[in-house]
Image (cartoon, rainbow, N blue to C red; front, top):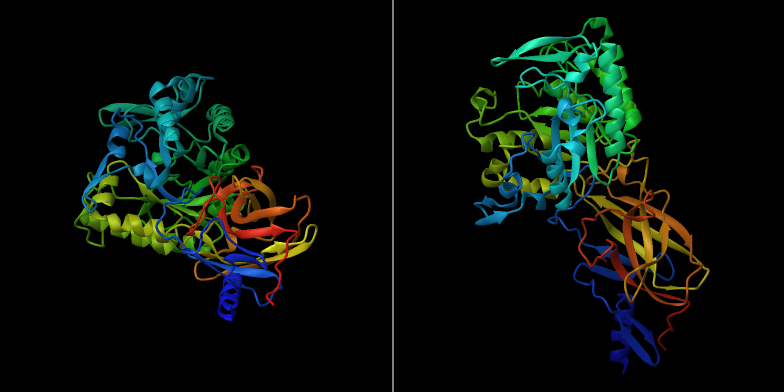
Length: 526
């Protein structure tokens, strides 16, 4: 009999059974493979749940992970190709959409706004289908609007802007002559403002849009090699367009390309003395960072690395590779690339050094990621961006109705990036929450939010601890399940960030921890 009592006591301390003199009830769910439960010696009545990390699951989290680039020509077989991409290492087809949750569309202003007060997302059937197909696959969108027509086969600014009297310049693109507006022309600015307001009215929705590139002027929309009517307007133009994007996209992150010649008339050279100050101003007003030349050793140099480091863990970085391996001579790179696989590794190394949150699957480059460097795809999923999970949580297993409880919790980030909860568009909307879940259907009965929790502060190799108190009232007596999650406080406290944790999750995304009784107490073993 003594042996039986000792065995039951051990089970109680592990948090796996309840005990009363007449019965011992086993928990209805089993998380024991992925967590351990032990009595908390520091908080009376609490039990510590230790949780194991999940390093493999692809997490659909905002501003995190891989970005699939769309094709502005909208090929009819686009999704057929990316839904059935053969991977040699696996010996089978995969869906690229299973590895990433953002579709990036780099489009001309003319396509999005072909006529005044007419918008491509309403009228262009190919664009509408591309967007609908992405949403059907659970993907969010991202955009860059390009104004400059240089190196393009058609005008990238709508004809109605020129017809209205906007001043601009012509350039040769192959055998064609194309026209671009001066960015300091007042008629251009008025028409563009009108478009951006309509664009934001349609897409200022974080549930559907990941980010917006917030400059879009200059060659390829990268913010360099601008041609002004008057160069002295450079600073005014920069302020105008950044204010325009940031004031209209209030809920969706706005990105700025940290180019060493930002807003200037050249594409490359020694860093412009004004670049850092201009970029700092944009970032301080709410922009996140991106760069379009990762892996290009001659273009992504120490200045770019230093600028990324300056904003480390303060603003997330979106990466784009610079080399187009089927068009460029990659052997010219100082790293002496020979194959596309070499370029992929160079991009990956630059990305890791910059602690980027997002990497790219560009059109024409995606195949080499999967077939020549598939291990890097997996590594970035596991180690890149942010991957958050609760390491240890201390909770009561029995609560007197109306009592104040103490909860301690420790969080870790397995990724080299960070969760940008601090950017103005998010404004600290993500918080740690604990839920009392209905044992019958796992529905949420009560939520307790720790107001001091901030995922933006969780950095790799630096666990973060919290202690907070909560009053348990308004709850019917009975048995519940403790759940934990990171909620979006702007969406009625529903789960907003998926956890990189092993264990049992409810359909709503709560990680279940252990049973809890309201108004029931353990009876001591005699």
